[in-house]
Image 1 (cartoon, rainbow, N blue to C red):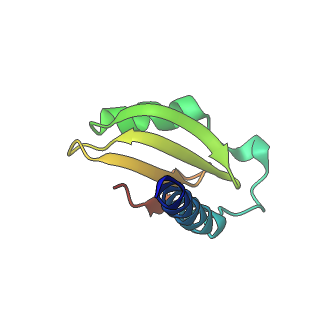
Image 2 (image 1 turned 45 degrees about the vertical axis):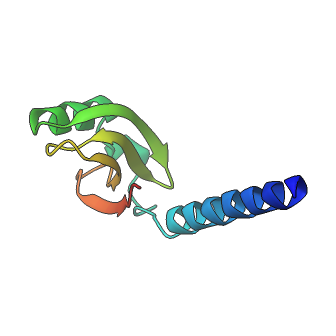
Length: 95
């Protein structure tokens, strides 16, 4: 019985991880924009905070800026932005 519950827990974790990787795998900003033309991560954070967001982390992923935090409505978000234009590229649904 114990091994069955461990197996089910492992399977559920594996499926969740695969779904997250699949979502991220399709997200990409243009690789044609030279890094010299990228605006700073802190500029993006300040822009979002001016709009009422609470930014917890900004990092680079697949030529995008990936932002973790809370939007102006207080909803938890994971959003990808173009590093030059700060246009929203994608948003990963949060559970």
